[in-house]
Picture 1 (cartoon, rainbow, N blue to C red):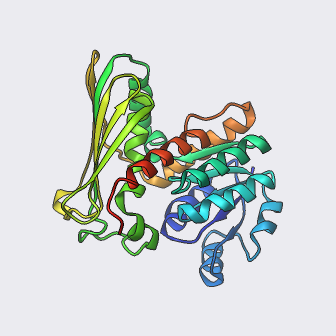
Picture 2: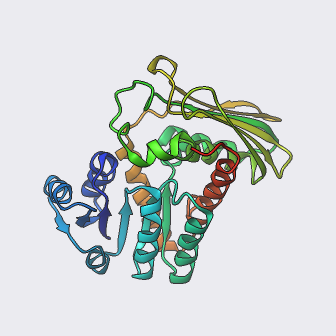
Length: 294
């Protein structure tokens, strides 16, 4: 399948680009970015063509992979779908319900495939764990805490990301937490959000339609020594704890490419498709509305 890559930042450079270039069933046609110099540099590293016109890239591709800020991603995803391109998107797809819904509607209207890269679902250990727990009934309580030092003194290539600075951990790692809890505990009826005491730290409490409840602590502001990712569910089957994700993101992204290829071939909607991503965006937006402005 002929792919185009949108974006030139660290995530495109370290994850999307290498995975697409190495995939045996992908021809990486070209790269488009918002600035010509990084676009040309990344295209050279990936041995492909830089594009100045994003619509020209759409016309030359069967699919696009997007590594851009969510509110840049969403309208470009709609344009790509309207051009007949299948979509491999990043989370969150947008930061407004309207933006996410427009992506879902474009996918439905044009009949294109769509997979959203919720990383844990495509990493071998965590993806297998999620599928195993989803086959069991009776989960009653869950938690998913994502504590990172991106703004807390850690050595991260994402600390300078303007959209992460603006939107914080709620929007950056909140999708990871929800991608664990929703498939196991079911749709959410209510979400309550309160700010934490450190930086962008946010606490969420979720009430699920199944009667289950869950909670999240999300932060990019902890010190490196305090950083951790933990998730678990409890109920009739006992206690199940999310394993450590122990593979490079580009390997996981290769599985997301496989998932999109399968979805296109079979016509079956992937569980991490546009509708699931829209559900996640709506919940995060509802949480954001309860937090103090600024």
